[in-house]
Length: 325
View 1: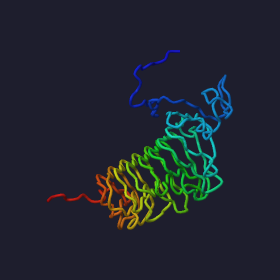
View 2: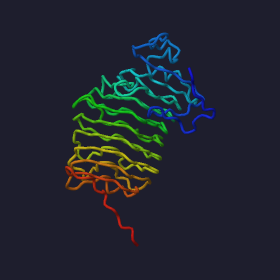
View 3: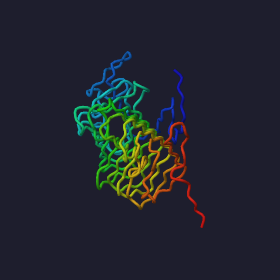
View 4: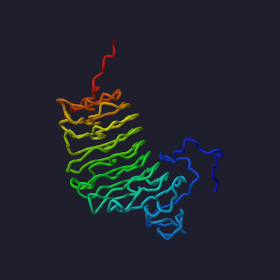
């Protein structure tokens, strides 16, 4: 069979069928699958296998235990794979430098369903972990957070989807950091969330520590249940955020009151640095709509559009300033 070879590699990674395939590092590659459709010569997934393409492991948690911190290992999860996350310890992301990539599209993407307890979460406790291309489903009442980030810098979630199961079962937030830890470099890009649960849906990201280099770009967040004065995308309280980049996100919300909570970013911090630009927001507050809390004077705001009326295009919000001396 003819194959292609690019002798010097792809320095910036490679995109095949719209899916990013980064340049592999020096580490090992492991495969995970419990799908039942097998080709000739392939084994069903088992943690007693070697973790190869034809003899994959059956669980992601076990594959992570076979990785070595800092080696740059990759874990590929095959289409049709499905697991449940039942507790706060069932699936720890605790090996530094690993990349976890889900393969497949639509309903064939690897799917992780959160069940059993509202404390079920994926704890992240090691630096430089990346996860891509996975579908996460909330199937319990008021699951606090899909990911809980402890001392783990440069955690990157890219191209994933987050869904609630019903009007009562789902995620309150997607990523939550903990107090007084280094989670600098948190990156959340190209993801999609559909929040349907009625019990106090919260922002996609809740930051509980000072942070540098937060990146939240090109996500779509759809909230079908009102949670007035709760931001849909990001809350970081009074915590100082430096070098933040919040760009190109689309947010849909049915909130009718944003006067004290904003719709995109909520914070009481007045120092820090960063940019909030080119975001598109739809909500139902037509009286006193606020995209970013007024106290957030540390951010540079550019071209953020808000639509609160039926059938109208978004308006610049906050309004354009006058920098004339």
